[in-house]
Image (tube, rainbow, N blue to C red):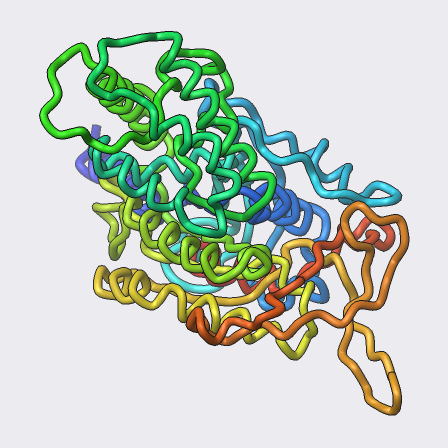
Length: 468
């Protein structure tokens, strides 16, 4: 074989090797963490994202998503997921609720599930446009019960620390009525006694009932352990039969307190840690959905608890500036978007106030993220519109209302919502009458097309640089 033939073959092999290396380093797989507490709208957001990218990706509908506006998005479709041991996100069932007549919200998530989208596009600049005419980015989304998310901060706590925090929370006046049955029994509980399995099971059952009642009556996020609310395959398992208990001082082994401490540690090791390692350690981007309106409805205590829960949960994720090597071997989240969801339940002119309120709640967390080199943004969104703005004249005054159908009602109404605060008011400045924001059903889709508010802004911030 001639020298020129060897040189040509060597160059061809070098080109192939270079192409593979560039393909990996260009990060064609993006794992997006759609995080939020129970009721924040994660399932509806994922459903809306898939619907808009697969069947509604037009410049009129997503004008702020550059790859769509510049007509570079060829197509987007759902593809088989790589995690074969996780159930698939039931997109078709979820979207059927939004497109029904009348529409309704998709059922809340009761288990972890996943979905992968392939976005084929034409590159507009950089190295990609010289490698191929079209390129594909794979977007992996994971949905899970928000109740399970709140367990993550428990990994950094001892049983004594967790108990002190939970008991302090349950004793707050806003939650005392629901907590009373458990706290009364706890006052008579003998932590030094030898282990009585039936007594522990009974106490844990009462504690679980308190958590369920607080979930039904409030928007309190930090209801732990979350598996007591959605136990899944752990229903009835002893590992869930623990509850907060004040440390009684020196305790010998085989006491009630020691046994509860063992169960707490087992829950962390066998339930929370695998969930964290398998699903929360390899994200690239993060969206944090927050239901501020429900927290405002609950009152000052719940809003401050929401602030604390956000800070504690964000601390459990790996954030930092991402480069080629870190993307390949130790991925970290380099962009975080905080979104006040369901913003169309307030007047159009007041939606920016939700953005400023959320920003004020997150200032300490945002500072930490920025120091780590993370790019962040805050905005108010509605992944699925549930109202339309409406001007109403009353006694010569024009009022900015919203028009929609409240959840559980059969008729549409024109409603004048309260004005949300722009920052966390002090307890002494909290309105005496409180806040009363209504929740609405999804607005009917027009010709099979659902509407959104700023979903394209969300997609551009989180994915725009991956689709250049």
